Image (cartoon, rainbow, N blue to C red):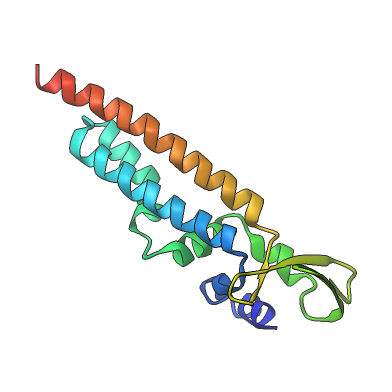
Length: 156
């Protein structure tokens, strides 16, 4: 119900706590990697690459935390459309061990996983957020290697 209420009020930050742990950590990873990449870019990249790259990473690097990363992605990817269409009515809940499925009145199923703290976490965004975290980590490696090259050339 908290998720449905937050979706209805367009407040994705408020249901960040109801995502599964892996999804939350993926958002924190994106935030951390983009901050680190932005720092390396600002210190080492020449113009115009510096400005272009900083603009590209700005929203994620300047976000307050992982919940802001989630809120930004939620809006960019229009995830509200996916949730709004039928979260208004829950037909049934099926629980099997650490996993649960919420079936809506419209027939859509939303998967949940029980977290370490006992709260059920929505899992529909996890794979995409994990892919984002992996990409941000790879991007940081590329940014760092390029920054090292720019530093070497500058100090010759």
